[in-house]
Image (tube, rainbow, N blue to C red; front, side, top):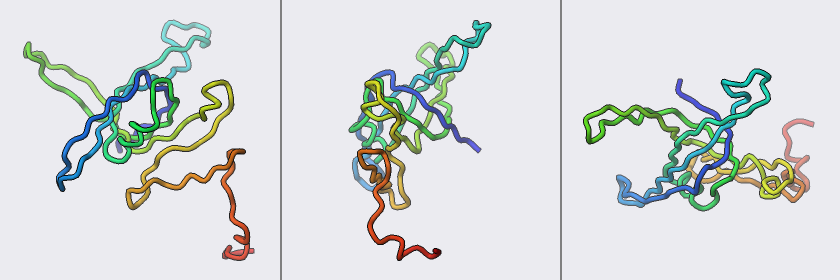
Length: 157
């Protein structure tokens, strides 16, 4: 199994380019980097210091379009995806080893208000079965709106 879950902040604005997909459509490829806090640094004796690890990430297709439209430097996100080797030989003939995170789902880890001093609000982009965004119907108080009369449609009482 190859699955990674991380939460961090974008270290720079995403770089997005478009390429031709197999069926001739344009496909977004978004590259970005996130900083993920550690609970303590290697040099810390008391556990109070924090440091960060930096991960290069890539998102494809509709998720790449979401990244382009909504994410920018400093945005806090929760990301799930997989680790992929990104090894190559440079022009000096030396083997360069690196990894990147291929994003599969991205959610906002805080609201705009939280990034300016408020609280947490979930949301984001999770591909649904048909490739469309999953609905996010949050009201101003961060709770999902429940339609009137739904009690009559429940299979249990």
